Each structure stands twice: as C-alpha cells, then as structure tokens.
Length: 284
Image (cartoon, rainbow, N blue to C red; front, side):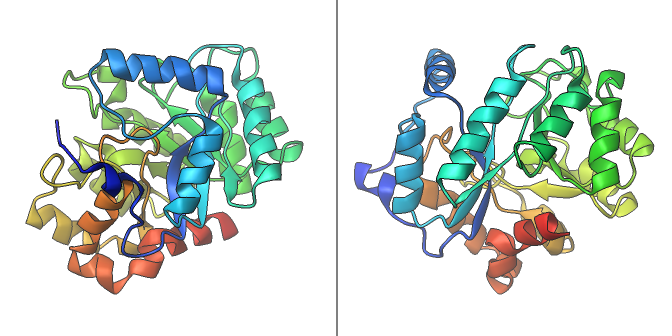
C-alpha cells in the first residue's frame, strides 16, 4: 500500500485541471455500497464518497469541470441513475453529466435517447467488467448506432485492469468488433485500456475517432508506463484525455497530475491534455 501524508490529500495539483474526464457520481446509498466493496477488497481510499463531499473536494483541488460518470451494475436502475446525474448537472455548472444503460434492460436505446433528449446529458458511460457485458453485445447495437449517428461520445471501461485475471469478454477484440460495426463512434477507453494499451493504440491507427483516457495508468511507483510507451503515446497527444477515477483513487489527487507533468510532451501540451481535448470532443 502506498502511503501519503494526510495534508497531501487536499493539496491542489501544480496545474489546474480544466476537465477531469473520469469522476464517478452516484446516489449516496449506492456510493456507500460500492465503498464497502472496495474496503472488503483491501483498497484504502483517502477521500469521502458522498456526492456533497466529492463536489467540495474537487473545488478545493481546483478542478474546473468534470465528466460525471454513473454505471448501472444491474438491470432496472439506469433511468434513476441518469436522472440523478441530470439533477447534479442542473445544480452545479462544473458537472458534465453522462448517462448509462444496461444491456439486459428492455430497450437500452430508448434509455439513451431519453438521457440525451430529455435529460440533456452529454455522453455514455459503460463499465464492461462490472456490468457483465462485452462491448460488441448485440443488445447494445441500437445504443451505439444512436451515438454514432449523433456524434455523441462514450467512455468505456473496456479492459481487465485492475483485475489480475484475464476475462475474455474484456479483451480488446470486443472493441474491435464494435468499431467494425460503428467505425465513426467517438469512443474513449478508460485507463489506457490497460493491460492491452499497445493493442488499443493499433486500433487508434485504424479509427480516427477512438481516444484513450489515462486514469490510474501512470502513477509511479504503483502503475508506471515504460519510457518507450510514454514516447509512443505522445504521437496521439490530441486524442488522450486526463481523468482521475475520483473518488476511487488510493493516493492523493495531485499525484496523477504530477506524474503526467513529468512527461515532456504532456508539459508542452498541458492545456490540451488536462482539459482541452475533452472540451473539443464534446464541442464537435
């Protein structure tokens, strides 16, 4: 377990984060259940996981805007989660609300359409591991067709990380299958797609709308990208989005920012990396 001084938890990063593209918001009772799961798994979390605390902490840390990401871990709750996110978006101008769907619901595409047209949410969040799905699941075809047609982005936890076992439905091949059907889909893959980052970069060469988000992917000495991979990532600098996975981080928020700022191309394009790329994606 990495240790930190308590004062470091609320220390702002050395550069203001314009847009954090990976922040979770849930109703407090669901937050409590998720936090109990992390505690049972041995994760030591330095931050409180109630919505009011999260909003206050992000303000203290100087985060200007953030993507608020839910995910439905079971059928029947997506609409309620989406309404909750829409309420947070109405109440706080920093909140850029995303919605979720569940493939086992009767009509996931209708859920997506309502989230966009009635609730005013900005994109889709899916967590393939927690939601028990593969990204090329045919039950999601209508959802992804809608997003592709409208140019609406989605952020997808698609890979095995941080789980040590290899789960077949989380293999990069399932994203490849999805993009073969929806080649213009504006997909953002969380956590650099770890541990298959190199395979996702190959897909980026084939699909110009594919992007990666970087949370938990480079926080030495815990998670560290080798120099060759950091250099390779620099070739895709305009398609990489900073995100933190807040509040489910096991270290002070500023550590991820500092780690990336040690990379030459990130320092040179800090405004883009820490917010500009995310803003442009939503503006298209």
